[in-house]
Length: 566
Image (cartoon, rainbow, N blue to C red):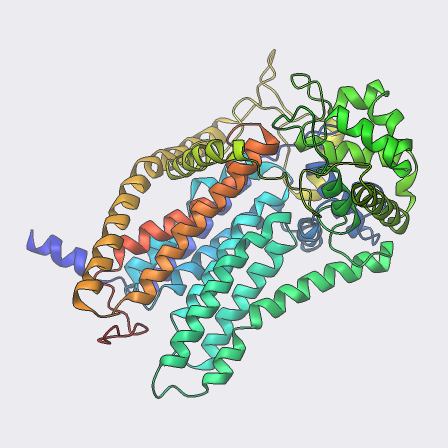
């Protein structure tokens, strides 16, 4: 027994650490090599197909391709990533797992001042790298959520690594800030909701600056505080870079002409109008649209497409609501404008939507139309009273859904790609991974080789372990978080406060993400809880649980040791 205790207490050597890290990298690459991408040719024009075709256009030297109503409808950095993978000959699925493992390693080392044993750092790295959500079936789509969680994890690692080293040399300090900026910047231009990282960035910046300024005898305080602007500068670089490329090719200086600019202004103005029979999920019902056609001449050309064209109505109108739902109305607006010839070029489209926004707001100001909300420029739904309770319920369910790692199987068990063999071969040649186009004979179930199924079974067993272990560790970490808060108050010291704040920030960001997605589900999507939108939550829970449990008594040199709270 004593020998066993001695072995458990003994730390691993640096060589053993790196050998095991290499083994984890290799295991994830083996999984990626045996996974198959999922494609739906003709069925995902605003998602997977948009990104894939844009990446191919970049490869051909034509940036995002010929301009239409979809070209700048989303943040398009993923297309750049996919084109880069193709250029260097790195299979798409392997590239995603390599990025994840690098982000996991960065996060483990970010907490090195707290987890000072190689054994603890490796366990945290392995837990993040083997995160079932990071290789779940949704990551097999040729879509941006394959890399978005890893970009976010890089950001968190950078900000935390910087905060825990605020007294260290400026070189190390700068490296972590650059890492945070690369994560934040790339995430910002990968998804429209990349801005959700801003609260953690701002709070972490303020807290780190306060620690720097309060530390007696610390040199170069102003330089350290000034360096905290590095992540924001890199976000600016990413935004300006994408905007400059869009301006060069389309004449509009923006990363997306959907979630900001004149289209957002027009859509926001439409959703201001008072409804006679307000219904959830229907932001601009038929009665409001009829008022808009009459009051705003610029919108009249779209009437024949939105109200009279059966092809468009069948493709976008919700059969249960018998109207356009929130999650599709902005797309049908743009589609109708495309059919009307408004998207001939980006400047014409921008001018048109600005004239629509101005016309609606003018009609409101003159009393022709009645507004139920103030001026707004946004494509997100307006928060209503009846959204609050369902959003809270969905947010807590989403947190539970993530904590128990539901819907995280590493392959599509019954979902076969929709593509001809020729299309599948073309896609496989570009992304370096074979689509699931081969079916079990006489069924539409995807065919997987016995070896593939063995590997999938192994990783799905890991998912089962996570679904049991992580909730237990989360409860343990929460108990310790509360216990240490009580101890700090009783002792009237701030020893350990910095790490305590970091852990609180991680779980708060997990809850914030759940709440954001819950609101969109309740007010717009109505598709059920979907792990893809929540996949940034899982690494935060793993970080919180892992560090909260493994960090011992939280004695870390970066804290205000033995200082009395005044």
